Image 1 (cartoon, helix red, strand yellow):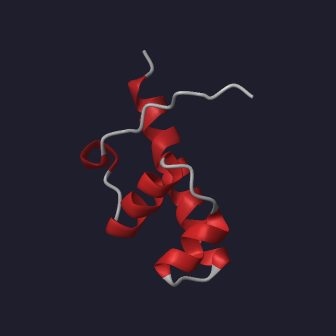
Image 2 (cartoon, rainbow, N blue to C red):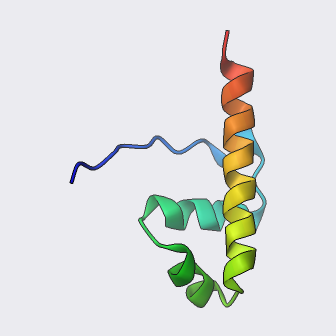
Length: 67
């Protein structure tokens, strides 16, 4: 298996909520959605929504930076 290096965006640039930033940090550490839900005391579908929101913001920011 090959590990991918992912450069996480600056939270100040993408304007993540506190929970979005927490979810992003835990994703970067390799935590799964079920693990995060358990650790954060949230329902799994809610954590999935946070992940979707983070990915949307990252994608939008990437689109803005394209020439």
